[in-house]
Amino acid sequence: MVVQEISWKDNLRVAWFGSFLTGASISLVVPFMPIFVEQLGIERDQVAFYAGLAISVSAVSAALVSPIWGILADKYGRKPMMIRAGLAMTITMGGLAFVPNIYWLIFLRLLNGVFTGFVPNATALIASQVPKDKSGYALGTLFLACLLSIRRFIPLPLPAAAREGKRIPAGLARHLAPRPPAFVGAQSRCLASSLS
Image (cartoon, rainbow, N blue to C red):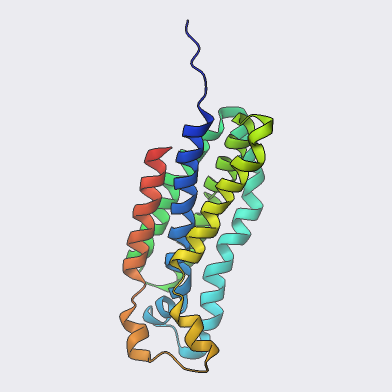
């Protein structure tokens, strides 16, 4: 039986790209959440509450379930957990484009948090494979993917306009519909899963 040597550099490239797409899929959806919530028919005075709930429910559920996924990753391996997280997040992020009401939106965001875990598993995978003298380089490179994805896909002109005291016209904001970003986010998750 021939034992194949693990190519940590190849795995780093795949994990980097997958982590970048994970961050990109999140940062394509979250900035538009208030607009999305409003389009679902929520009253203006309740939009902030429901948008905040839809965003935070994912983080809270991820915090509660992550230790379970960690135990399963130790038992079955990090790559299967990366694939599981990527495929589940593809379904939940893609499903956001089809939600008929706020309850489905919150439910899918909850599921998104429950099945999350691509980036932590990618980090653990690379940390376990890279030689000790290259660990700082490898983990720093992997973290850079997350930073670049967030910085690249959050709409930068909007904060600049807000700093200058300008308001974004409501008509423009409505044209930045949140459903296409949900599709793009889902497609990037699917691509990240297939690369794992």
